[in-house]
Length: 292
Image (tube, rainbow, N blue to C red; front, side, top):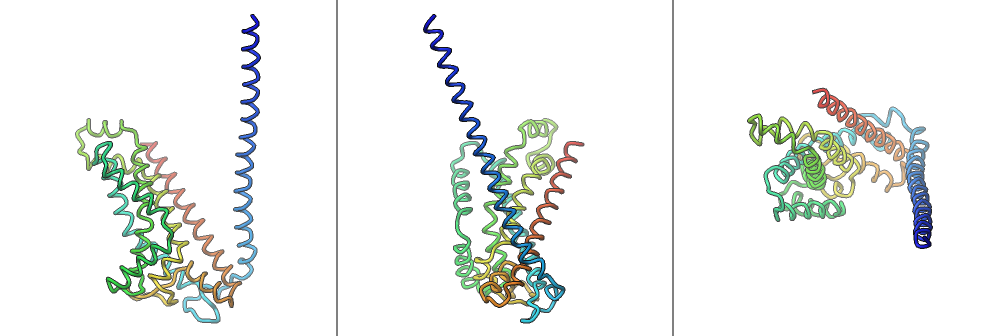
């Protein structure tokens, strides 16, 4: 009888202790979330307060000069750089992910090596990519400081991100989808193109969004590979200046700090617009898949 009472008392104490720790952990999670949101709001608010009053029409003039410090050429160059980098990286990332998930057996040693390499490349600082791009694309291949050299360098940077996110998205597709497609007589290639890729499209778009975010915010690698010419390129071998490089140069010169904040506001709006548009497309695709 006494042992039973002792056991019940011990269980009660353990339950109270576990409940106390659960409350503490919940408070810590809430505190972490509040701090994160507060830091983000302070950062965005500071940029908006410092930059919005200095936005003017001269900032969007097509020709750049030392008086208007226009961001329009840099904005167009950013769009061109993003499009060209995605054109290079997305097909390679999709192809590599499809091969790793659908065409290799489980426990394949090559797959483990490729995944480890991709994760390692993800953590490499961007300045290292810039030095590699300068030595290989700019110097060895003779592309000089150009749009093409910068795009290939950025494509190498975002390739592991797109590959890993696409791989995880394909692995998240239930095996019943594959089995049903094979049971209806579809081959592996048709199954991948008509069943797996549409089902994994939200996850693939998430990787593309991350890649776009890194491209738009990149400056170190592009200084060494794309240069800082403010004019619009007439070919892929011309030097260009993206928005992030434009902001860096204005800030380092110290003569147009107000225009730097205004450019940061434009860049922030562009990133938010890209994220919102991509989220809308992902919801539409998910809804369409559920309706089908």
